[in-house]
Length: 36
Image (cartoon, rainbow, N blue to C red; front, top):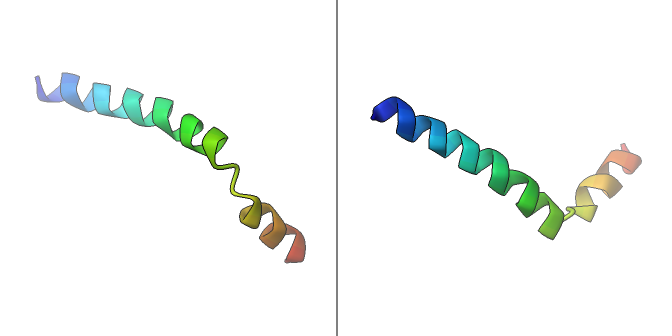
């Protein structure tokens, strides 16, 4: 069961990460990259 839970956690993280990035494109990160 532990393995199954871990797998679900990873899948959820992979699914939520892109969603968060889409909601918050993080423009400051882009500007910082250009400044460097």
